[in-house]
Length: 84
Image (cartoon, rainbow, N blue to C red; front, side):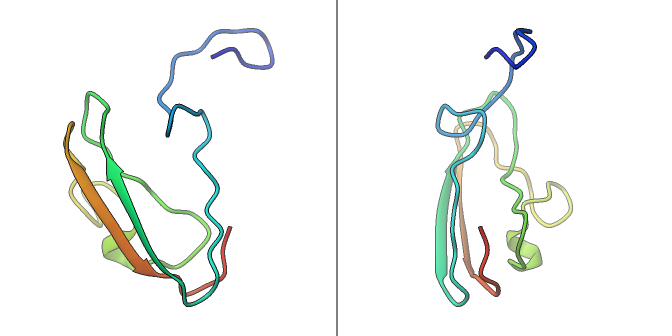
């Protein structure tokens, strides 16, 4: 990927993108996101902008164990807030 200063950087993305897809949630929506880790190391998805419950927050080694490479995890929660 080339950034605004024309410097090439190496990074990981979501669905082949540098920025993850936008999720728009209405208060009360039930959400299920299946995260399939295709990275070479364990990781999680960490959510910003809403209250999703500690066990679904995606903070590795704090709220949950990291998802191992070639493994998956279903994030399932009810949106307590309307968030984007």
